[in-house]
Image (tube, rainbow, N blue to C red; front, side):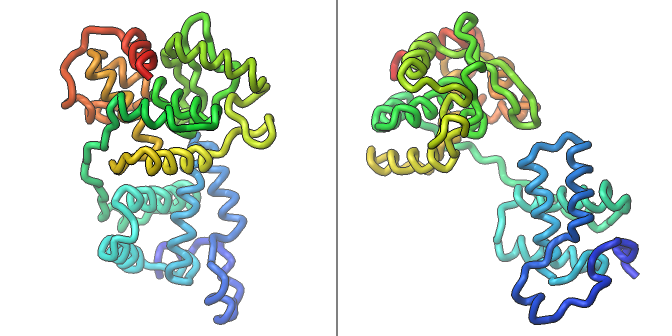
Length: 307
C-alpha cells in the first residue's frame, strides 16, 4: 500500500477506459479547492498557485491514475522521463517538485520521502544584454504610444512585464520622482526611482489618453493591456530593426540593471530597485562593473535622456 492510499479522491468511482484516453485527468475538485485554500493561507501568488496546481494535474494525467495509485517509483520515473527527454528545463522541474510537495505535505498532511531524492538546478547563465543604443532603436521603432511607453517604463524603472501592465495612474508620485510597484514577485510592494524625462512623457500621455485606472489599458479603460500585446510588439520590432540577439521584454530589465552597474550604482541599491529577495540574484550582473559610488536617480535620468 502506498502513502496515497488514504487520499480522498474521486477514483473510488470507476471511469470508463475510453473516457480516460480522451479526457485529461485532474485532481478531484474537492481537493483542488482545498489546495487552493492552503496556497492562499500560505500567501502564494496567483501565478505560483496556478503552477503548483498544474504540476499535480500533469502528474495525474501522465499516468492516467489518481494519486492514491501512484508509488514512489512512479514519481521517480516521471522526473527521469522529463529529464531525459528534456521536455522542460530544470527550473520548471523544480516548480513541479515544489507543487507536488505542497500538495502532499500541506493539503494532504502526508510525507513522501521520494521527493527528497530530486534536486533540479538550472545552470546560472548570464542573460543577453541590450546596449543603450539598441534600447533606443527598439523604442523609437514602436509606433503605438501606449506600447512604447510601457516598454520604456520597463527599462527606465527595471520592471517586470507583469508589474508594468498592472500599473495604475495613482502609482506615479511625480513630486518625489518615485513609482510605486504593487504586487511584485512574492507579493512585495516597492518604490523605484522614475526619471524626470519619463514623468513628463507620462503626463503628456495622460493628457492625451486620459487613463482612469490602469496606466496602460486595453480595449476598455477598465482593463489593463495584455502582456501578450507587449510581447508581440517587442518581437515584431526586433525583427524590424534587425536585432538578432536572443532577447525578450524581460531583457530590458536585465539591461537596466547592467547599465546601472556601469553607471556606478551599488549592487544593494539595485537589489532594492529590482525587488530581489536575495543579493545573489542581483549579483549576476556584478561582473560587468565594480563602480558603486553614484546614486541611482541621476544615472537613470541620463539613460532616459539619451533615448
